[in-house]
Image (cartoon, rainbow, N blue to C red; front, side, top):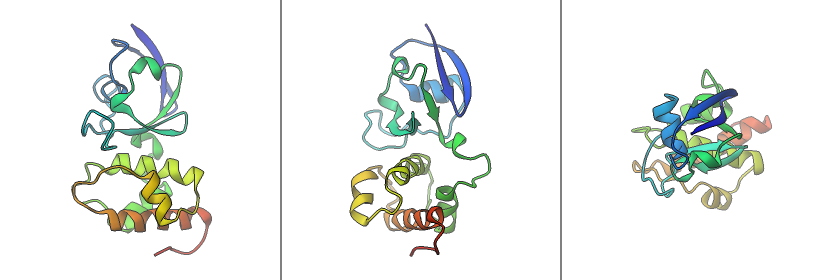
Amino acid sequence: MAFNITVNGEKKSVDVDPETPLLWVLRDTLGLTGTKFGCGIAACGACTVHIEGVAERSCSIPVQFAADKNIVTIEGLSKDRSHPVQKAWIAEDVPQCGYCQPGMIMATTAMLKDIPNPTDDDINTYITNICRCGTYNRIRKAIKRAAADMAGTAKAG
């Protein structure tokens, strides 16, 4: 069955089973491999993308529910890593293995749209992605740096 989705600003038609998780459509059908498979049950957040501007875990969303919606993956956040969150991640040397980081970045960008100056409690509430390397202190620092950069203020620390 064919579904129309808009991914990173480009309209796509995909001919897949309606129950196929969006994650596999993005990775296997469209070749956008930045979004990662972690757990398959929407617990870890490695597969986080934006659907209509909301951070969603794509491993648990059948493609039929993403039809005719705007989807942004890590590849669509910026073409050159110039998004403030990506820049903060680099500046704070967040990734170790990097596997979870695309999902973590996508969750963070969605949070910062709603909460431009998050507290530690906000971060704990909204960023529930799992990092097996345990870079949570650097993640928190990068989130605060990105928030400050997006607000046009000096580096948070």
